[in-house]
Length: 217
Ligand SMILES: O=C(O)C(=O)C[C@H](O)[C@H](O)COP(=O)(O)O
Image (cartoon, rainbow, N blue to C red; front, top):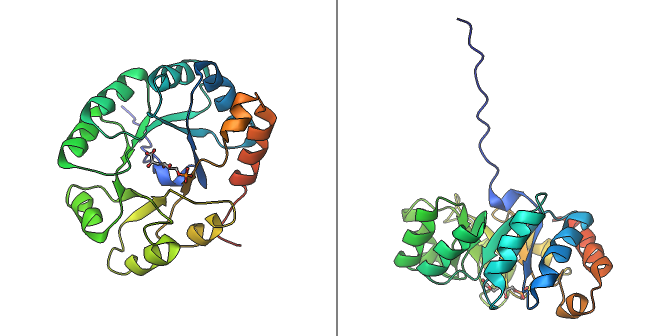
């Protein structure tokens, strides 16, 4: 019997999907699908929908069901229960602003890829001890910015980050130029005013600008 070797390409890291992961706050459930569609149109087929509003889980479920072209994740996962709820709603990845052992347990148990949040070298080492080398650096600008990440790249050569928090289209290239940064996160792509006014064209245009960002300033 001849056998064709199957190709098992490793799933790309969450850090290598897009240069900027849009961090989105949804107040009105009806905004979820048009926002996601606008991001896809603009060239950013990834959305981190934060669990900060009462409709967030429903919004994740809706996007997962109705916008197949986007990779939908849950952000602001701060409790074990939220990790489970996000998984059940259809989230395809999880992002947390920090990481406790309980939270790491819960996120691991979902089987989803996730980015645990860290702000210090010790926190990063704690995550690495558990096998997690793709991390969120939060709050990026306040915790030391690109200079901080550059400094810790020597002692932590195997760790890569998605810095998030206070990053702008102007500062993003400084981060993206670092070898230990795969992407950045930011909320500037989906301003609240654009959502409340239904300006999906604005979201698509901001997504287009973010999708074109690189480490070359
Ligand atoms: O909600 C979370 O899980 C967070 O960790 C916070 C967000 O990532 C930042 O609020 C986004 O930062 P901005 O682009 O400065 O708005």
